[in-house]
Length: 118
Length: 110
Image 1 (cartoon, rainbow over the protein chains, first blue to last red):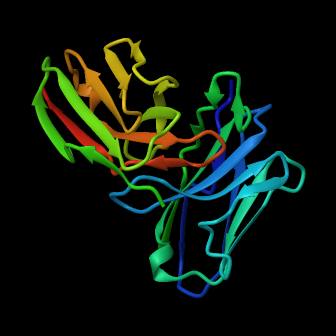
Image 2: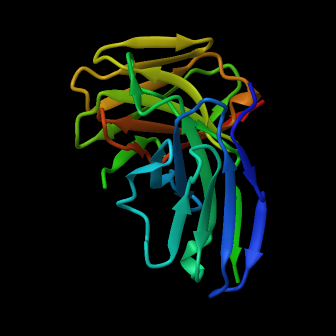
């Protein structure tokens, strides 16, 4: 099966500019996640969708970050305006559902978008 | 948020050696996952664990869900150069988000 697709792979912008990332999850996966991974650290959850509804956005800096999944498939993550500390890899992941008969469903990751802020 | 501590932080081993790494948490979890991440790529799922005490293998990899539900272990037997990468653990309570560890960087010397 095709994996999680993300674009662009790389993005360089100046601080205070805006940027958007796109994610297409694995076909049939109801749950979609956006993570921020700062160099040398593990991924940190920004927002989780179940179909087109938000399940958890407690760690999303809502003053500058926004995300949507309007039709319950593709998703976009936006940063406006960007700060220097937003330099990171933004990973999208998807899973069949939030949890199933086995318990929590494991996530499958895309290759991420590497964002550099100048 | 939850903090998962992985140790060791980095490992340099000779090809053919066995590797052990672990992950500990201050909270209990219902699920433990182990991922491998290579430069420029996203994490790839290696093993998923769902029950305390569970021992699961995937080829040369073996992972265990700790009895206390606060830790997990990953072993790699007979390491090869392509095992190089960063290994992350992730823990989750049902209905809650996954929390990732700090990562163990593995270097295999041919």
